Length: 140
Image (cartoon, rainbow, N blue to C red; front, top):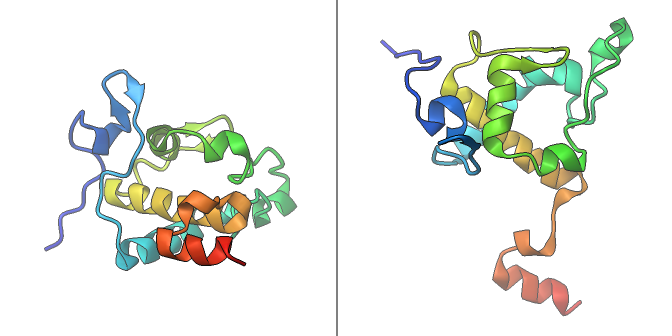
């Protein structure tokens, strides 16, 4: 029996808030399994509207949903992780909430995958590169 949890407490992991503010940071241990789960869940729940790369060009546009946001824009790249969690949970504007369909842990896995996706789509900076690899890059 695997326990399914959609929300259970007023803590950061369940709300995305630290006190009265949106929190930043992922409250789960990141692993290749978590990233894989995030990629899978992103593909199921997010890519239809936001597209496989998060550019806002999912198949839903072909059916008239033209208000989908690109997840690659600076506004969302700099958005607190907790606010993204809240948006996934409750929705925003034309986006429906997924809090009753996507477990808490999977929402955080989606955010972990989204952050990696944003970096892969032009959002990486030199500080993201490990120090030993940065030295190699700077010497080229």
